[in-house]
Amino acid sequence: MYRIGDLIHYGDTGVCTHVDAFYSREMRQLSDHYKKSLNSHLCEDLIELTMSIYAKKQELGEQNKKIGSLDESVMKRAEDLLFGELSAALEIPKEKVADYIAAKVDAIKAVKKAEVQA
Image (cartoon, rainbow, N blue to C red; front, side):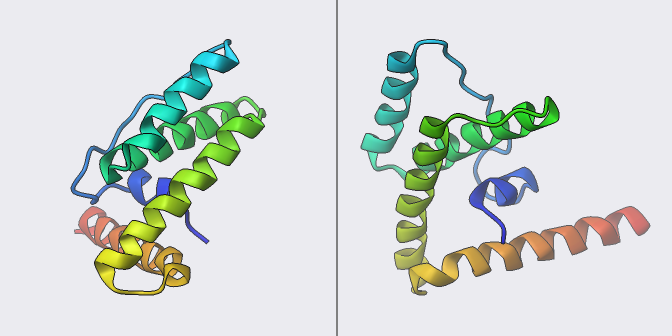
């Protein structure tokens, strides 16, 4: 199943397609950064937050490391809030948003593959 970070990774969101991962050795600073984005209740902030944590997850994965529990829980919370917003906007059940994203990702991959072959 795809997550919102996967959709962003493949582009075609109408938003920015690259966000740098946010790192801090101080848990308080990291927590405050995440709270600011979560508490704004803006979809753009939720997307950027999710993208940032996704980027961190990708970068650490390349080093055979995992993101921290705070990162993981914030990413899940941001996705939950965002999926709720997308559910309302798309008029589909929240449980189907992930499938909707997966279908979009697959469509984007197919278009990019066709462009490369052309």
